[in-house]
Image 1 (cartoon, helix red, strand yellow):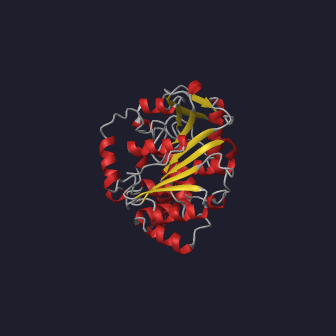
Image 2 (image 1 turned 90 degrees about the vertical axis):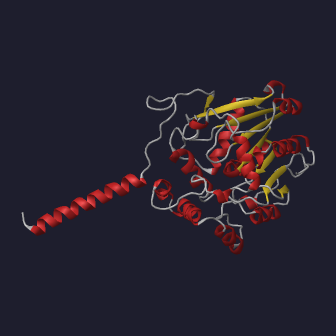
Image 3 (image 1 turned 180 degrees about the vertical axis):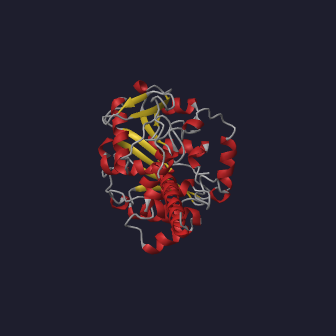
Length: 351
């Protein structure tokens, strides 16, 4: 065999090898769906949706048959229906509140939804409420990246809502109503690794799995637990939460990081079907209320952008905690204040 032929063969082998490497790096593995032969077992109650998927859920508080208030709680990024919620049973009894949390699609024991969108999340919530017979109206509370389902509820099923709370909602920098200067200033406050992550999620989502699993560059401040994302108050909250048992924490990503974490990022930072800042007041006669809680020292979401959102939507009641961070709902006093304000209309005392 001549040297030129050998060179050609070697080059071809290298090219094929490179193609295989790129393909494997970009293409996520199939999810390990709960309840299937090779998937994790199902240990939680679930409903079957009209499209055949299952949603796993958890109930807390008073029995729904005796509840004065029924609340659907929507978890954030890398979390689940077993989210740490510092409400004592005595407090829930006093409020007369039934709380329903669920694993969003791909998380925990809920089936993945390859067609997941901002819009689909609202209809998952509506179908969950109907199958569990919560009645014509119910409250919704969402936190962090788990607020895109709440915005979707305000858009698509406002007639089903008895009241709404958004806690430290993550901003999508591509919402059309943001002025370019404000958007760029907020975006540049993110670490470079997160700027790359968000751009890939928005413009080239097919590459997000590669970015989030490659080992060459820093890829995500949250998943890499960069200390810059937590302020002093958040660190105290993390310390307190670490003392609480979390026996189901291992289930959060058990079906695969792509259908849980990565798809969450792609949906939230993709092109939405609507602009939240063009929403109409769902309660024009003050028959219910919408609240937004944010921390002035939130290291993940700039407070300036939240202030702009509520300026555009003056029917939202805005509460800014002066030294608050991103984990406010996990603080007992603030969590109780959020529930009392939403359900009882009490003016919160912010400490």
